[in-house]
Length: 323
Image (cartoon, rainbow, N blue to C red; front, side, top):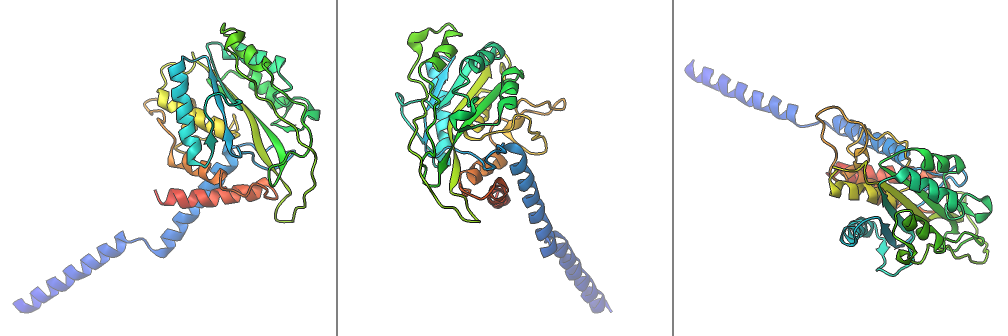
């Protein structure tokens, strides 16, 4: 009898361990549901975070060359920021040129960003793609006015060129930055014209013909100029490294300034309202980095932005699942 009791106890113990092991091991159905949920979240993230201008229905990104210029910061601080942006840019395959290059990414720090942004918009509409005959692609005139008039800690404006699949400009662009852009920026900050550098010109090229397919177009969107304006009063007290990552996202992605990213762990929540006691993000999250990788790996000349979002989301889901 004693032997039977011991045998029964041993059998029950084996059974209990087996049940516990089964409870801890997710079923294939659970894995599928979880993977599907991550993909759905990635789709929503990709659809929310960036702007694809209706006129072209493609997402813009830098092609290869990036030349940052920073005004309103001390030299050492400006170089630290440029180095940080370069680190993020290099991670997605971009080349950041050394000092002396022709700037195409201008970051302006000012204690009164509202006034300086309005001044830039009023004086350099040619640079910002306001005139339709410039053959530049932007979020539109209404969005430009919102850029000028909406108080923010950080605001941005992206200008893209429609180019062929191999990177040739389709038509001549009349837009030039000249010295006036940086003169206006630095002059309003009391820096003087002598501090200005060569502007951010857009050289035109002869028109070309190219054939597309149903799956792909003959053209793509290359970022040609990005302006980021930072209000030094509104970012006071925010960790410098967090600001640098936020600016890197704004520099590399045509972000939607109205996007609500609160459902995600993202650096883009840095200046968004938070519940009391909730700490701000301190760096790019896995979601942010996965989006950047997806954006810079997507098919540039895809038929539309929906196809591009699908590609980005797929890569995001794979990357986030590995974290």
